[in-house]
Length: 408
Image (tube, rainbow, N blue to C red):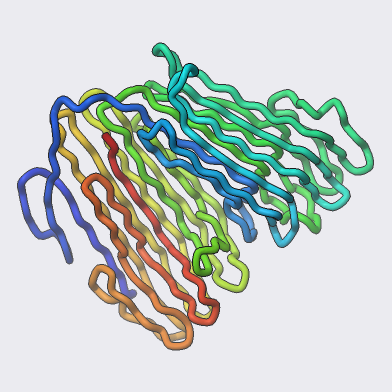
């Protein structure tokens, strides 16, 4: 039989029981007449590669994740953003911030790059993309736009594309095509989110810059605001993230977050195999989110599933996690989580997985594995199904991350 590990903890009102290996039940409660709040969320990204064997998740990330603070902000910058070991964007800056002023309650996200280049195929200077979503006088609105100082495809300059119309598609010989100024917005019963992407590269021809079949978004922004509710739902999920000390070497894969839920629908994000150079090979990753906010209850669930991870001779089977949070109009709050790792193998040797939360497994000369890392607060819970500390590279790889909470 293959080794397997699974944990679950639940939160509900006034009962305690044992479920599986470990189970506890508890409850927090608050005022039944809490004031309604707004939720703000958004991000801006320098580059983001999807699908195929690539070495880049989101780079130059600035993000605010579901806050009720109308003055939250974050900014970031990087000299060069790389995709597939190519210097795709230079002098990249990103920022995102919430506001509550004459415009209403909302979020603005911006991203700029002095230079975007794919060899002699595509050269863009002075790129800027921005998006704003806001709520005022009972109405939800958004804007999004992209501008360029110059753009050249091959040897041809295209001044008519400096302020491109939304979703302008241009063929790139020897690469595939790009979409300029991809913008849009989605209104729901509980809020609005808008997005803008300066350049989206679709590589459908074999080339030296971007692997065939890979999509790369360059300067990617999103802004989100909710209508007033008893609580905001917050959290995130991703398959993997790698870093050396505090330096992120591979951003979150299949990343999802929310501030307004999904109107009770399941939203799924998947990517194919991922290569983290010199560190790990990651199988397909899928995350989901499902939640809602309203006058009587707010609830959210995130899940993460990674098909497999290989670090040298270390092979790890499917890794899964989930996290849930909810609040009712009488002020009661519940939290739940689970995590699961299927198997651990080095060559022909199969390792038994420690059957305790935060347990560790030391594989000499390869890595230390930590299982089921959980952080719990009054109204928030997060879990990492597996953390791999790679000895030779001083690198930490987080696998199977889910988090959920309620604010307000």
